Length: 259
Length: 301
Image (cartoon, rainbow over all chains, first blue to last red; front, side, top):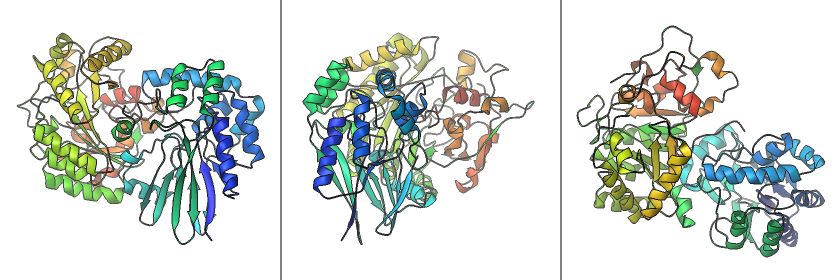
């Protein structure tokens, strides 16, 4: 029987998607659930996510957003370089920082930076951006397979699990695996409103299932409007197309989103 | 023309190669069909200081890069598309990893772009075009890049768009203009030319080569000192994660290819040793972060 774990990242305060994902995981009878960081950002009411994570025993690591909120840094360390992207990142960060309770900030501050576990005899390494840098963007179309092999060798892992970019992908190379598990916080620029998480199954083989999560995105959009979050964020939740944080996308990923 | 000379009278900090993420190829040598007045290596139709790289040289280095775990490949010149092997070089590279080519956008041929469209479609990796343009009006651009180039570059951008590419417009800040005005001007120009969500990258000038004559060279205080490296994230410097292959060996970065001291060896394996920041152009890299990548690395995290 395969050993299975559920892994997601980038909740971005989307507590409704988190609820839906956790219900789906429970239905499938998967007990081990992991979050690869970025609990806050983008969405409304940052504190609503934390009790859900605790109740369901979700084991989290720290993302760049969590590191910034936890330490009350001046910015989110998202790694954007475009002025418009940074403008919206600042709005989102100021809102999330102000809205995250002191206890929750302390909890974020204490999260581990990575997590290692053995899944059916394979060495799995969980990180936020990449094993070497929390806010490194590893996109499918701009990451060579020999670079992934280098990361796996240096960091002594058979399976690397990451998030940060907002778009899921996976690659099998030399008997090893890289999985970007996607994010729960916002749709992945494909015109659908669902978000994604990943199920890793390991027995003699390693397999990855990306699971689409439908949730009450209309309700989230209304709650974001009530919090006076930018219309651009709400449009993304309603349409499934990114309106901000676009400029880091390489051309292949951009084209898929008609950007 | 000002060739970068090392600073001899002070201790210079040394930067180790963290990992060879970006492998550059100076495929166009210093030969260019244009003669821009701000070019930091003074490229021109007559500058043969560096020659073209042939397909076999690129193939050899691509093969060597696999064992080194290189993440991305970049191509520059001169003008890369003056190299008759350029299309084949990019086709080959896309079998290894992502490729970015820095071009002036004025010499594309239909057949090349059709082949490159097919090559990118067949690859899992992105092919990025960085097209240089130095003003969002003909008057501003042509003053730097030469008469008539504004219209030719725009035609090149439209040509790329027609083939489904999404070029990154690379703009050097050649006057004391604020980046926001430049950015807005370029966005507007691109949108009126059919580029719905244009990609723009704004760069500072490097005060060497022709640029030292156009405006000014570096001043005495413009150097990287050991004190400036305290608490500084070395990953912001290209020399911490890149090297460039030229027809005269492997150099530390695309900016310093004319400096003998920046030649790191004959092969990639030779080039992995640390580099001492003894050049004033290093100051610009220190001030502005990784200039040369598509997505500059940002601060510590």
